[in-house]
Amino acid sequence: MTTSETQSPASGRRHGIDLARLAALTARERARFTERRTRSAALAREAAEHWLDGVPLHWMTDWGLPFPLFVAEAHGSTLTDVDGIAHVDFCLGDTGSMFGHAPAPVVAAIERQAARGMTAMMPSALVPEVGRMLAERFGLPRWQITMTASDANRSVIRWARAATGRPNILIFDGAYHGAVDDTHVRLKDGKPILRPGLMGQVWPLTEHTRVVQFNDEAALEAALADRSVALVLAEPVMTNIGMVLPEPGYHERLREITRRHGTLLAIDETHTISSGPGGYTRAHGLEPDFFVVGKPIAGGLPAAVWGFTEEVERAMRAARAATPGYSGMGTTLTANALALAAMRANLAEVMTAEAYAGMIAGAGRLAAALESVIARHGLPWVVTSVGARVEFMLSPTRPRTGGEAALIGDGEIEGALRLALIERGLVITPFHNMLLIAPSTTDADVDALVGALDALLGELVGG
Image 1 (tube, one colour):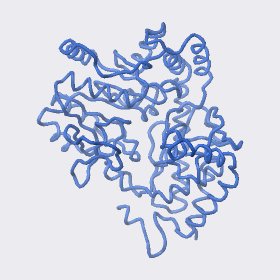
Image 2 (cartoon, helix red, strand yellow; image 1 turned 30 degrees about the vertical axis):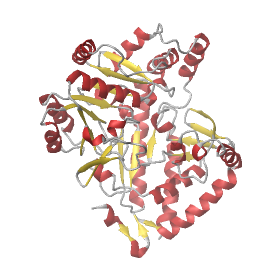
Image 3 (cartoon, one colour; image 1 turned 60 degrees about the vertical axis):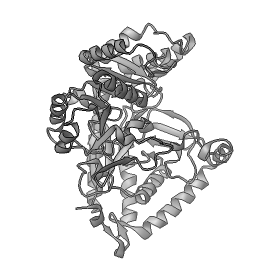
Image 4 (cartoon, one colour; image 1 turned 135 degrees about the vertical axis):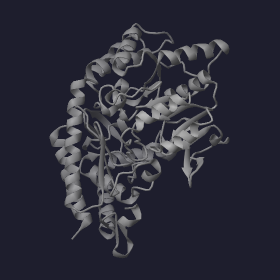
């Protein structure tokens, strides 16, 4: 069934939701939000004097609220706004705080290191230990640190091109790999185009970036056939277009096809690190040439890592020897002592197998409860999950490709639910209805979310 088949304009319904009831709920919840958050409203007015859209990063307006919700503090799974209203946080910084806000071991490590100095453009004494921890956990022997996953992916792309001598890369339609110019390409009617909304791009990214649909082996094979592609950059499960799971055997065939064509493979686990202590890669036995993880690796402090094989390292060294000088990669603040200290504490004391066991069990409980609620209200929606990450999708079937996933969803319905949940002290991610379970998330937190969503859907579906 397609998305259009779930809509009934004549009856005033869309995706099973009564549109008149939706409009009434939205108006009511916007009024309640505005009435209860006078301090956030005042800060929004003040901030508008000096910040674009009134926020220091324009993404902070993506929530679709009457004005931004300003945060006073966040601990564990609880986020408290400046008006003193506490919320159970299932967004967790869109994975950046996946292990909870302000985890005590990370906070203590940051405090200790900050007193000793934060950045010196020299390695700290923790470097050997953190390197061993990364290699043991994720299975690749060589590592580098960056400030963000965007920086890590950018470095991986540049090194892959240098190591192979090939100009092109390949990504999957609908993938998101951060603020990396080369990856902002999508498919439209089977043709590559610049990602809609991309600002200020003056050269055609499509010249050196190929894009195919996830799970489409024939398209992948054809795109690599001329042996000009240096790198395939992939999320093991697509997560930024709505969750798209790999079909059985797809990753094995992806690896076989890339090897046969001499193309390197990078697995970006910035979101799918929710799969387990070693990410989706270790949980499912993947064999990438490069491995990237960002947001949560240092417990919420900005940092990312990328790993690679010894074979790739040899090719990187050969490329560097052939072209000595400035690589064009890295920043003065990269791999600073503060990031290393936070990373070590997070890997050793927070990002543990025991923590993951509880998180994944909680996510399973949440997914089952959401499926029951959706079925009870007769809605044509599905629930998808990977590890500690869960989504509900306004579609009767799970998408197979990013192109299919792009047709799913409804900003008006999802925005109304997000706003109403915030009014009930529950925060979910402002896109794709993504929910994360942290070690600090309790069964009571899950019950509160499911109960609130149940009541809201009852109101919106009607008789």
